[in-house]
Length: 375
Image (cartoon, rainbow, N blue to C red; front, side, top):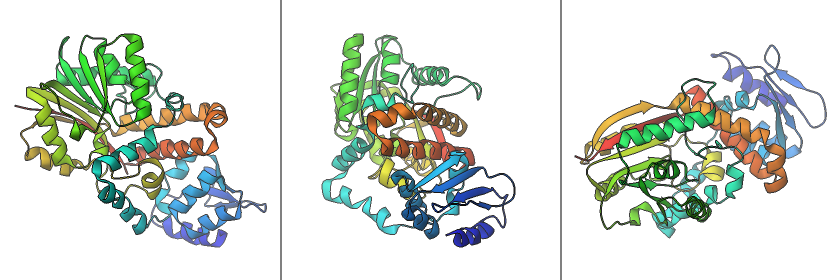
């Protein structure tokens, strides 16, 4: 294992700044790769973890971490910024993403995929989300050290300003999450209909808005199958475009549900190419057809639609700061999370959140918010 890693280390860092790290095998002793103090140490706790490292396979290493066969001491974010150190070639896993959609139909596959991620208990997500809005997408920060709660309030206000609604107007939200936007808008007298595919989200939202006596209607239905008796004044989609990769059909649906002159606010995680999301993300975090936004392809469909594009804003650094803070809060709540939901769930989301922060920090992953208008 050590020999294989050393050979890979020498090759990988031949043309880039080297990152020193260490590996501590289960039998004792520590091997340091590179010069200087290691930024992190990979501890091997099981022979299966050693085999994963020796295979130089990113997905195998992630699974070994989930199972506890490997652990990481020190800067996990630094380790995850070295994602490309390991290969991630799994064509069968990529192909299997799309087979269920063909067999079940796209909407049913979307429902199952959303449930896989979002139907954990709401209390679990609340251990790391902001305490004011419970928003599960990027905030908008005035400074890197601004509290997450303030960044999320700014995000809600920016969205409301972008769609230009006033008390009494009707807004359709695609993907209700834990009620961040719907609650913020409803407290300003705006009537909100929010859709979700998650049974847990539906339960949480229904109880929340009934308790707070807010004008919000919760509908558990795929947006493609949703109809309204009259058009909405605006549509808001925070972080759900990734789950709606059929851009043409999505834009047609927005046009159907929106009044002339109405606005659509959207934000999303993005990548430059369709198939560079990791196998770990596809298998353990967002299965099914979900995929990062491809902005160039989305804008091509906007150009073919009746919509006008009013603005596009780069949100990559905002999403980095958000994921970093979520990951820190998750780590701070580790003991409670493990006690209530188990070590595997904690490890899965630790990889997801720190890995996402690393992706935004290195530029592997992008993020945007944009606004459309129906003439």
